[in-house]
Length: 137
Length: 137
Image (cartoon, rainbow over the protein chains, first blue to last red):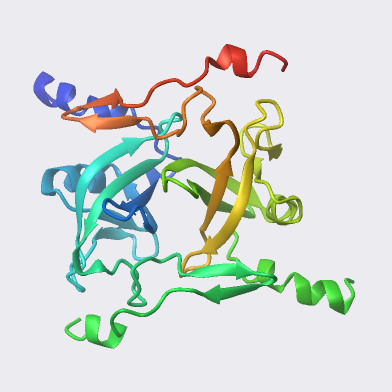
């Protein structure tokens, strides 16, 4: 069993309603512009690491492992605040986006296509070629 | 089978990667302030209705039925734009929030608690008493 100190300090984690897979949807928002940068998932370990390290650590559902955002690209997300919704099952983190690029396509935001009539149209430029971003990986 | 006209016009819906339950996470953002208002889910029918009607219609996972946001409270979300993310499995809708209240607690946003040390602290006021909002329901 944990000692009473860690019980107390982790109570905020226990208050979260993790889904049946132990995961939580996380919205990340640029703290300066208010732009929504991306949407991802965290498990308990990744959220705890995010808070301890001060930058976003997600859970990759496809790779089934911790995903230290920016570990390859350098595009870390420095956490400025963490909010939880009324149902205690979704997080909103406000971040400083290193490099100004959150998306693996080299764009600021993953939400770069907008519905225009009956078509999804790209409305945001590629800031940096992904081949350049991931050349060392 | 559908005729070719509806096939073409619904292609944008077919491009979405619905989850195994036929659902899609949706982030709603205030078009004026950039504030994140809430997080909910849509299925294909609710998204199609949202686009046709011009206001947000979600899928209530708890009630297992269409949820015309604002049907009881009057706090409709008038859709100004719809974006999709790079993985085509999350939507971001920018809305005009009727009444300035998205949360059932009577607050502007559902994300009204912030992590402060090891505690979730409320940082946003109740604008209208929920008992007043839902008195006719």
